[in-house]
Image 1 (tube, protein in one colour):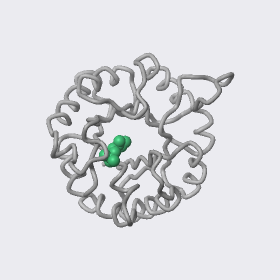
Image 2: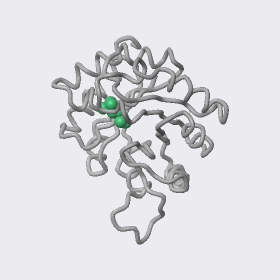
Image 3: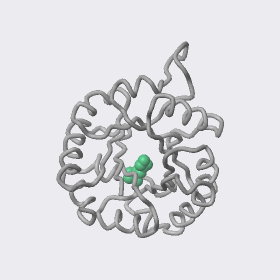
Length: 215
Ligand SMILES: O=C(CO)COP(=O)(O)O
């Protein structure tokens, strides 16, 4: 299982979380990534943790004020990027362009979607992975794996029907090792989570608990 921690714009210390994620990944052997804000990517990557961007735009070098260029986040140390997160939704054409931009820059791609039908649509764009995250469960205490297990199994089925090579992750409300284990049992090969680590009093302990069943 891949554990991708999305720091969003939470007021946590990104370097502290990144160092903890790097250590816990090294100790457990579980792949852990940290998706940081653009301005934090370089110092997060300096910790040695697998570093992701939270978004890249469907643009090339040039006159694009205020946008995120895939090459720039890659140069800063990101190796992957989220696209179309529920909090930064794009039109299908822009998702397609962002996937293309990320691939051009050598970034791994994870396209998020709200439901299995959207998962099928974005899988057709050929990203490395897709992630189903029901918006109503994001930021809450109920894990998608227990609160809406069918959405995970249906998303896995929808993606497989389009392209068996695209990994399927799930997210929303995941905060414990049990949640990660349940997500795996439903067919997900990774989880996206945010508040369970970014808002934890002790992010390192939260990460240790998350990977405990996997180590
Ligand atoms: O949006 C998410 C990850 O990208 C999920 O957020 P929570 O883990 O806070 O529910």
